[in-house]
Image (cartoon, rainbow, N blue to C red; front, top):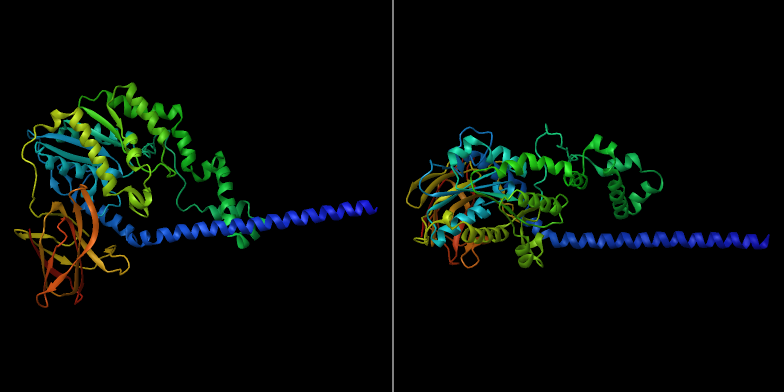
Length: 501
C-alpha cells in the first residue's frame, strides 16, 4: 500500500510540475508574442501616421477618375479615357494600349502620374520618341479573363482606339474570373465574417474561454490554427465562402485553368493585333498572391505562342533585400507599388520596347526638356478649376467630405497634380477670404527618374492680407502642389494661383 501511495504521490507531483511548466511556457509565449506585436506596431506607427488619410486618397482618386471618365467598360463614350484628355481619332502616331487591373487604374495613388504607364509615356518623350502615345484601360480587380473579354475583345472600343500594340499587365492576384454566372466563380469570405465570434460559438468552452482572458495572444494563435482546419471544410465553404488559400487551390486546378485557356488564352492567340503579356512582380507574401498560378498561365501563353515577359528575375536582383512594406508599397496600409517600384516597371518595359518593338517607338527626334505648367487634375475634383491665363488658375477652396489631410496636424488640403514634372521658381497665391495659407510640393528627382519627395514645405512671404509668394529652392521639378487654408467665413474661398517657371 505504501508503494502504491508513493507512486500516486509521484504521479501527482509530476503532473503538477507538468501543469506548472505548461502554464509557464504559455506565459513566456504570451510575452514573446506581445513583445513582437509591440515591436511591429512601433515600427509601423510612423508609417501609419503618414498614411492616415489612405481611405480619403482612395475615395478622392476614384471620384476623380470617374469625373474625368478614365475607364469604365460599361460606358458608351470611349472618346474620354485618360484623365479628361479627349482621345482623338487615330493619326499617324503609333498607339500602345495598356490593359490591366488596379496597377493600371491607380488604386491608392495620390498622383496617378506615378503609375508605371504614365511614367513610361513621359520617359519615352524625354528620350525623343514623340510619335508614340500610350492609352490605358484598367479596372480594379480585373483578371486576365476580364481584361480579355471586357476590353481586348470589345470591338467598339478597339476599333476606336486602333492600337498598334496591346500590352497586358499581369499580377499575382489576377486569378479570379469576376463573373458570378461562371461555374468557376467562387465567393470569398466576407470582410464582415468574424473568426473570433465563429470560434467562440463553435469551440469556446471551459479552458479555451478562460485562456482568452489570461492568454489573449496565445488564444489568438489557437484561433488561427482552428480556422485553418475550418476553411477547407465543404460545409464551411457553402455557408461562409472560401478563404484565399482554398480559392488558390481551386484556381490551380486543371479544370479552372482550362476555363482560363478557353476564355482568355485561346482568344488572345487569335488576335490580329500584336500583343505582349508582362508580369509585374511585387511582395509574394500577401495571402492572395499566387506565383504558382502566374507560372501556369505563362506556360499556357508559351504553348499558344503569345509573347510574354516575366520580370521577376530582374525584380529579385534589384529588390531582393529591400523591405517591401517600408520602401516599395504606396502606403503602410496598401500593397500597391509606389513611384519607385512603378519606375522599375517603366524601365523594364522601355527595354522591351527598345529591343522587340522599335517599329512601334519610331524614330528618335527632339527630346522633351522643359514643359509648360499644366494642372492635369485635382484632389478633391469638385473645386471648379479654371485656367485663366498663362501659368495661372483659379479655383474654390472648400472643406468637403473625405478631403485629404496632413499627418500629425490633420490640416486639410487640396492637391493639384501636374501633367508632367515642371521647373517652378515661384508660386504666387491670391485668396479671397482665406487665412493660414500653407503650401507644400511633391518633387521629381531627374537622376532617379521618379517622384521621391512628398509634402516639402514651401516658405511663404505674406505680401498683404490676401497675397502670398513662395519660392521653390530645392532645384527639383514639381509634380504636385498642395494647398492648405482656412476659409475665414462659411462660404468657399476663391484662390488664384500663378507660377513662374
